[in-house]
Length: 169
Image (tube, rainbow, N blue to C red; front, side, top):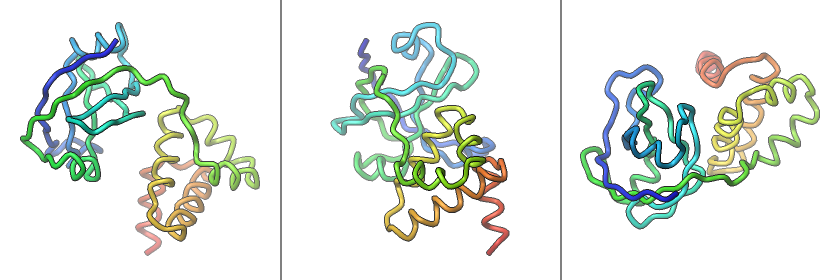
């Protein structure tokens, strides 16, 4: 089912790991139209204003409502910021998630890292993959792959990996 609605871009002040995120609130009523009786994160596709989107996660907020994070790149593309109204056309995205082929190839040399990665929830595996693929240079991509594999071999979460890297510098 496809839903169409308008929403205001909001920004978290102090909200733990979500501090500073810009997001679109997705009321329970709309989330249920997209995926009835669901309380877990799921992906959608469609449009924000006239910009097409796909494989975008809706994250549960615990009361039946969801949020859609809107990163800086997307905000720049749609030329919107906190307080602006956007028009959304959404439907559930059932497309299979693709993992960075370079990351998978590199993990073949570290079975422990691969085993840890494969035990992660799909959304976490996808997060790592998107982070790696979002690198603007090959050097950055290579560095991110190395960081991720090192973290997997030590059974570290993404935040633990990032904290360990900050301490290293």
